[in-house]
Amino acid sequence: MGLKEDFEEHAEKVKKLTASPSNEDLLILYGLYKQATVGPVTTSRPGMLYMKDRAKWDAWKAVEAKTTDEAMSDYITKVKQLLEAEAAAST
Image (cartoon, rainbow, N blue to C red; front, side, top):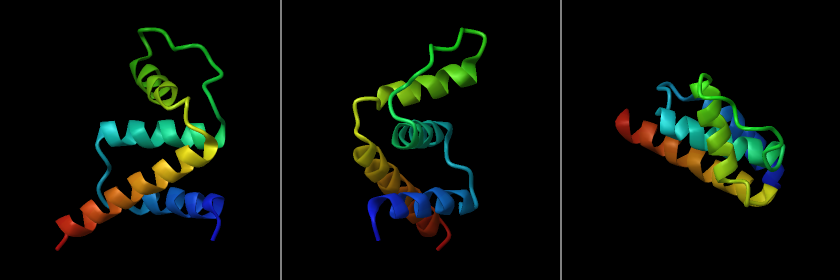
């Protein structure tokens, strides 16, 4: 299985988590996903009134130096960590 297929598979797996990840983990996933699928940030930073959008933009901006493959690989690793943590919590 190629990296892109593995990435897409984990993008689906993360949706099946029974407990929602923390906001911090969600922002990490968002930034890596956007970097992997879109590339570096192409928009300007949202204003102060848009706290959620601003946090998401910051998360994406934080990983803009990563290549597409690095972002995909890091995303897969993060999803695996969340799945393992959930499995450990349910035993």
